[in-house]
Length: 220
Ligand SMILES: *Cc1c(COP(=O)(O)O)cnc(C)c1O
Image (cartoon, rainbow, N blue to C red; front, side, top):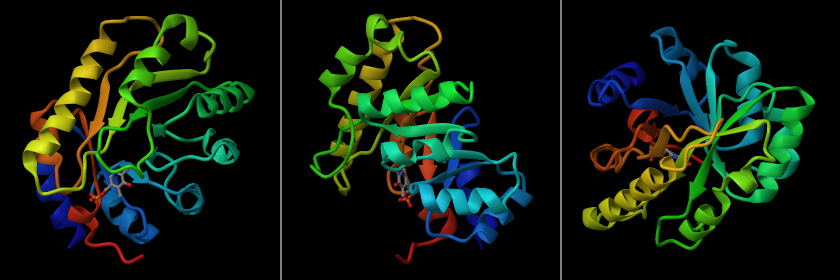
């Protein structure tokens, strides 16, 4: 039962940690069921799938884009997206800013940082983030608000490895927090999925993205 799974996960998470239910590959009807018991934050990783679901579901859902975003798709989500977790290039920052400016909206985003050992995952390196996160560079993004960082740990059963990656991301997050300049606020640290969210919360996550533990295994 989706509802029972959800309540179990929700009850195990501190109230100050945001739960994003990752609904990718699952039908709109499953999202509606959680909506009906009061949940509002849902995450999708593909723009096409997100648009199809957004069109048929209640307008007050807070949609989170958590997968790689191509610049040519930015314009479709900018009108309604709540938070883009997966911003991984300056090219993408430029395009989001441009499309947001057109419709006079400020878009909340997270910078995705590559913390895992796997080479296939997207994201900035820690060094790239440090050189990017400077007033002189970010002031040109007038229609973007950087709210924090997102990262995915290595897919491994080695808990020490996972913990090390999450604590490294938290350290970077805290460092950037000390560079205060409006409107960027650095108050969201998005880390933790079904298999590793308890470790992520212990290491300072403020938002967890959970799919399988709520909706069940995915059939691609
Ligand atoms: C699919 C996905 C999740 C959720 O994964 P589960 O293991 O099913 O909880 C979280 N974050 C990202 C970026 C994803 O693509």
